[in-house]
Image (cartoon, rainbow, N blue to C red; front, side, top):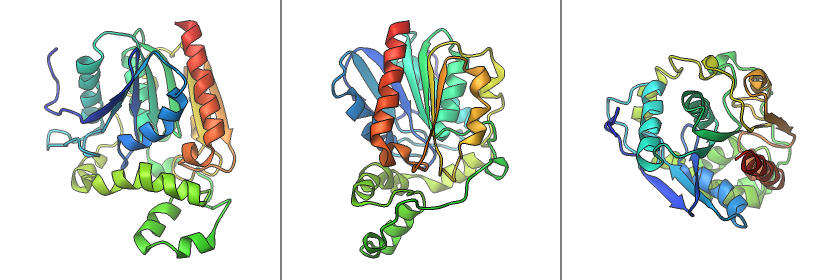
Length: 271
């Protein structure tokens, strides 16, 4: 298929069967999605999971031609053409990846079987316009924090609502490596044109199973703006999870696994 961009995305792949495309958020890389989703698929066969690094993140390059969210979306479209083709697939997006996933679902309504959004950007794309709760740690551990080097402590506490050895371990394994690998110069360039030219909800409503999971203490994207997405997704389950911030998949793994599993069940029943 003809390419619209010159970027080849690095990715990880697991399993065989119905494709599942998982898009991470702004700054981390594919390890964030792989870490939270693979436990869900441990006892589920028949799914081919694709975890790409978005341009400028992880091991995916972002040449000067990648200069906007429109270009980021084009790179993802190319990835779908190359790795999935015209086969039906499931789509999962986290944070900024959720923003791109909504646009992708809107452009491929007959191909996307179901859509799941994890702490997605809501109707307010500009961070200054978002309705956000105050930043707080619901479960803090001062002794744990004092044991960390300053950089790790800053990266951990920047998002952690639940500060425990377990959430620290997962942050070190699934989040921080991506933060350290990001091409910050390229991301700064792309951020200048952060808003997509066309709203993801500018197309017809998405009529297939959907899931929107938000954190009650998420001070990055919040939980209120996402509620306004519901009219466009009439088959969406909408959940606001307490004691959870922007990394709710790490802080409330049991609830997260249950919600993703139920979404997979609904998608399978529809398929």
